[in-house]
Length: 50
Image (tube, rainbow, N blue to C red):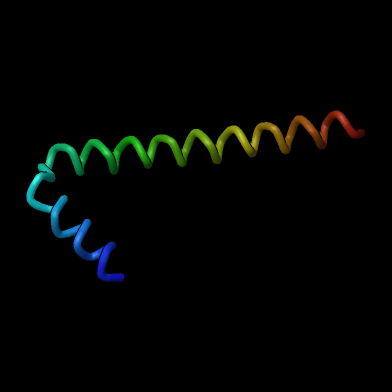
């Protein structure tokens, strides 16, 4: 816990708001794409089994 806290506190001053915003946006887009692809694959597998 001490190592993780120290790492976090040493990285904190180097973070810029635009970097955090870009990371949040990219993570959101990645999650939506991953979820969409999994739904499409589930649909295709169900259709193929029939």
